[in-house]
Length: 215
Image (tube, rainbow, N blue to C red):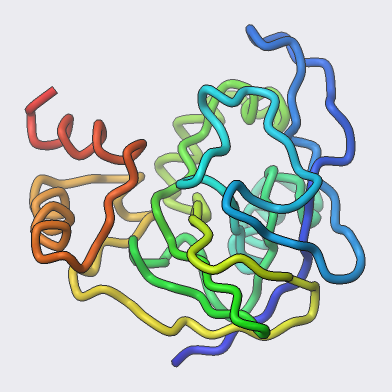
């Protein structure tokens, strides 16, 4: 098992005005101190302004890695502190963008999270970062971080170690899928589901169907 560490647990600091259709955004996440409860729909005290496209059981927690943030910091010429990309968990010792869909992370006290899909960037995220062509750039980089569902609720706290306790055999990684999804990857995901070794997120299924030319 691979051991990693939580750098920060983040939740919304304040709702910010946004020019999108909702009018506000909850992307402004900041680190919090002490243990934080994580339940079926995510980090306690966190919210999503656009619930049609964010949140829910399959996007309960968003994790981003220190190494990916450092790459963006160098490229953009600015700091990318924990929570800046709207993530709930900033982690190190593991690259969330290279997580295999369906892999499970186990935390002290028994909390278990399962990787469901990549973070697909939206216009709100682009306005937050303020870089031309950000959506296309973020997708192409594959440095997307990972959404996770809560398998076993519990507490999470900055500084805690955690283990990757299970990695599915299909091998489809979230960043590779977002940047350049292939029919072979789509079929691998469907085969894993048929074998009972993967539960495909409903939000991911339309992308699979599109890659296979069924949508």
